[in-house]
Structure formats: C-alpha cells, structure tokens
Image 1 (tube, rainbow, N blue to C red):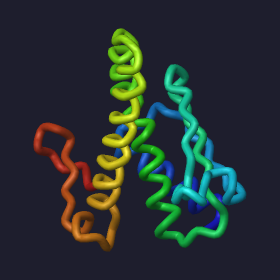
Image 2 (cartoon, rainbow, N blue to C red):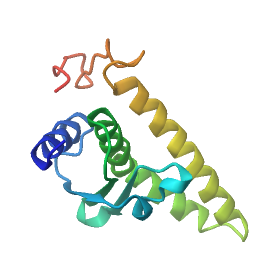
Image 3 (cartoon, helix red, strand yellow):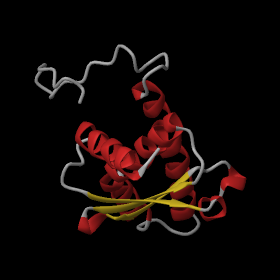
Image 4 (cartoon, one colour):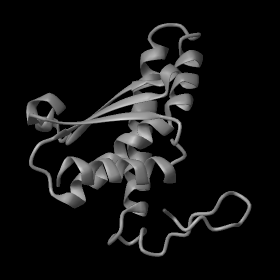
Length: 143
C-alpha cells in the first residue's frame, strides 16, 4: 500500500470518526519502534491541545491491516477528551489510586477500540451492514 492510498484511508476515517479538524501525520517505521514484540502494529502520539496526531505503522502490513491500524489509532484521538477527563479526575485521588484508575482506563479503552474496529471493518461480522447517521436519523452514506 503506497502513501497516497494510506492518506486516502486517513481522510476517509477522519471524516467518519468526527476528526475532520485534526491534522494526522502517517509514517511507516521499523517494527521495533511500535513494540511488535507485545502485539502492537501501530502507535499514535497525540498532541490533543493542537488537535494533531502522529500515527506510526510497522512496515510490511497487508492493506486490510493498515486500514485496521489507522482506524484503531484514530480512535485514540477521538477518545482523547475522555482520557484527559479521566486523568484529571484520577489525579485528584490519593496514591496509588491514580495509577490504578489510569491502568484500568487504558485497558478498557483498548478493549472498546478493538470492538469498534471490528464493527467498522468491511468483511467482519459487524461492518458489512453498518449504517452511520448524523445523530438525527439522517444517513451520511458512511463515507
């Protein structure tokens, strides 16, 4: 998959996920830079106050996996405001509670993101019949 195809996928999923005002940089990197030993194929660095993200994807991915990684990492950007709210609330607690809350949030966020990716991806049990609406019952065509 070339850079132009990847950029088109980022634009498509930014629109679908409500991230139109975010700037997203995409880069292919060596596997060890995204911690593939622990099962990661991508990494997202968020600069939420700037509405900017840098997505790194391990080289040599299939096109379907590249799309899955892009969706997954963009969902981290989409959840950034919630993550910041949880972090701010957790920081008000006594130690070791903030770390416990953050670890639990991270686990639940990743579980939820993977469930959403599964539902959105074409060819999965969830994605083929998905209808996306604008919140008022109007279909936006899913693109």
